[in-house]
Image 1 (cartoon, rainbow, N blue to C red):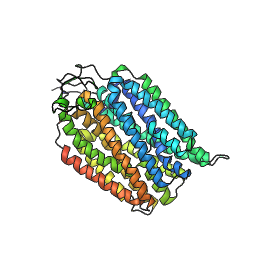
Image 2 (image 1 turned 90 degrees about the vertical axis):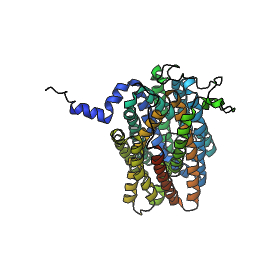
Image 3 (image 1 turned 30 degrees about the vertical axis):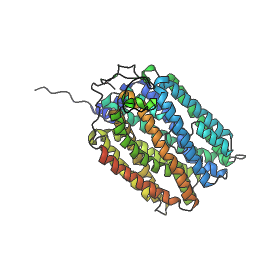
Image 4 (image 1 turned 45 degrees about the horizontal axis):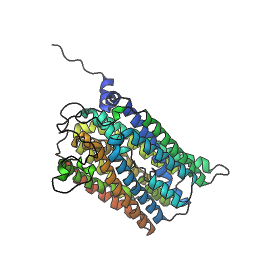
Length: 457
């Protein structure tokens, strides 16, 4: 009796890690991953030093929190506005616009020390106040990657999109911490001069993003109406002349909502609320504020602080690769919940240890598992909504998450001013655990890929 030849160990390894799916998706996906990795390298460096930079300028803690809040608020308007017009104006054009804004913001921070000028550059441009990717890039990139990959391979490719970003963040924090120590020790260099040097690197990574966006092909744009899967005819993003769900109640919704079906809105509104709870928590205990808390509590050398944060990002990158096989074995929602709960508990317990070692261990648990829900979350959204809704839905998702995050830093700033910095981590951990329970309860039985009848994306 003949039997089917078994795939080699190498083939099974490439398949289980998602490398085969990533290779088959093509050059555009590789450029997007390179772009995000370089961007997160810049964000990792800025998250390590931003609060310390303003502290060196003798900016009060409450005003540092205000800066982060207003910066995130600027990201809300910028990211949502650009994501909602991306399918009409062109996704590649929007990515290039965001890259130029990132370059300009980096240059301003590299040259200026005036709080109000820096605040204006952060609100109007692209600067990462928290280490998170809240700018105009992510929603568009996730929509593009979801469209390029086959539906059964989407989570695999998105895992590499997330994992390489974590490697970028790890490299950014490590390089920034080392660079500050080396430069500030040189004769004639102030600590502020070393911080400015990191922001020059931020601008350089913006230039890398611009090059990558310029090399993308037209495969990254939304397919013309009627060419995607699903039975409904696809409408332009800003078409207000069609009679659809948005006018059935006698009210006129804004044009960008009119292209999202009521069924999608009913599902996503629940997920959006839960994600806002999670994002509020993340804003209260973001990496920039965490670095500042560690610096205040233990008075660490900047190189040591950079190594601690960099190691946690590195662990997050390595752990992310397991999200793909876990998603296949457990399902998207189970993977999101079961990996996020220990991370949330680590945030809740973070202020308790009095020594660096145990505190560092909790940070490793938090960061090591924190990113494992990102790729399944993006795959869950992509599998829940229609292909022509993805960019708008992901843009709104990013906007709402950023909006929730804007409240976090200012709350933490007020708590820090009152000598209760530690309380921010306790509240954040409790909110994250509430998100985990709510996500499991509401989405464990959700039906996926309803609008993807064939194998295409």
